[in-house]
Image (cartoon, rainbow, N blue to C red; front, top):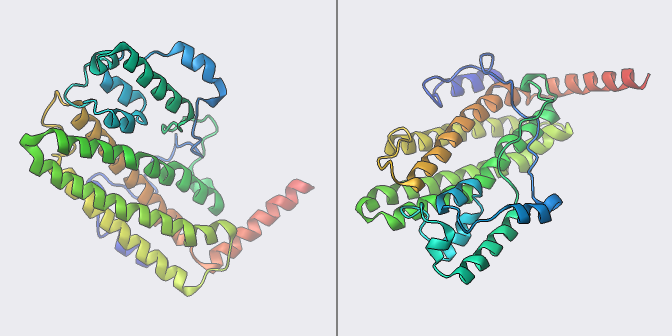
Length: 296
């Protein structure tokens, strides 16, 4: 009954016109886990090899999104003046070197947000329930948390620097804030309760099934928010081809939309239907048999 309710609710909307059922999704080439990389391990050689003084501001932000907050703090315009080098933007060589040192220090310690391509990739449907939970958290939830401040910084910068389109970007900024407010709350709730129970094979109660239906409805709300953003941005197409910030923001939003499409399908059609005591007991028994066989 739960599965049929999930299917009924899920098929009442589409995350994209080209959305497919779980059986049609290409689940290859997804890394099993998101391993954040940092530059701690080779910090000295990294510092020696990298110089930012003659690098354009837009390229610094593209390569290292963590630099957004620092450049904004120093009131450097990486939006419409993004083709300026760091030295040109700052003016003074001493101040430019001081800022460069600050940026490099942050790059060495800040977690890198891109997903690595791993060789030991597995199809999502072949994973155990705890592995599915780990995968969704590491592949999707952590990426959402990492990119939230980056996307918000870009949206705020657009609104503050483009007076000719202030009404449009103010509305976009408001939509993005509302979307992330709901999205972060949603994934936190999933991990705090349902995901924890699924991961630990805890006994699932009737209210857990009701919680699943509630989470699926929240997926629909996220879909509505993203479609409104997609419409406002003309399918994530920048109006100003010379504005680096608009281009970068729309790329982030488009990727988030695509990721969420897959993210929701995996939960609605593969993970959530597992929320039955019968299924959990069956999978626990299968795992015990595998462990027993491996020990012999």
